[in-house]
Image (cartoon, rainbow, N blue to C red):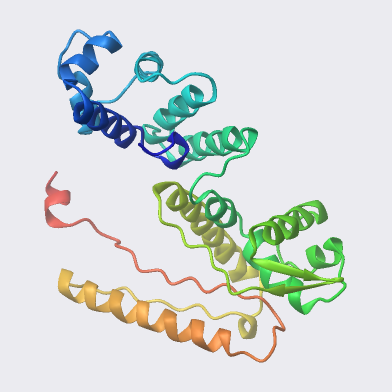
Length: 275
């Protein structure tokens, strides 16, 4: 069975634990529930199927029954909090706690680097600015940003990106590497949603912050069938790739831009409306 640090979903961890025990012994879900102290013989099976959830006390009981102690038990309990969180803010706090526990043990959570990178607009902006501002101090880089950021945040961002290999330092200059962080877990999706909200608020401010020649805002309101919506999404994805190709071939960086591509419903579907 994989180390607990490689899991983000406590249900999958419990499922793998039970499967492993069943493979090597006469273990069963009934036995698992019994040793955890639950009266219902299929309670943990329902948990793993997403039909119910573990309480904080239940997480403690299940973790202990699986032989988890110390750091591993705390990590399991944080996983429960993360998976069952009611909103993104609670989910982010729980995942941050998981990262902190991992750091204390000098181990790395899968996708932890991507989570940290995507949770703040500062990292991608600094990654674009630093290579074209040779010898610039963190304070000077911070002053180039249209939204307020502290020099200490820029310094922390630079150190982080050098550490994970997104930037390479040569003397007093920085170079971008070919490494990219791609989010593959629900945790990274939380960070991405946070960045999307942040960028959406920046877009709202940009309407008044920048003169018309410096920004380009346009939109359509249209009625669509589901199949036409899918066609438009495909076009948007292809367009985004074309824009990325232009940016990659750009001779230099004079300014860092953000492109928001937003297509979202303004009305409910018929079934949702009836409800």
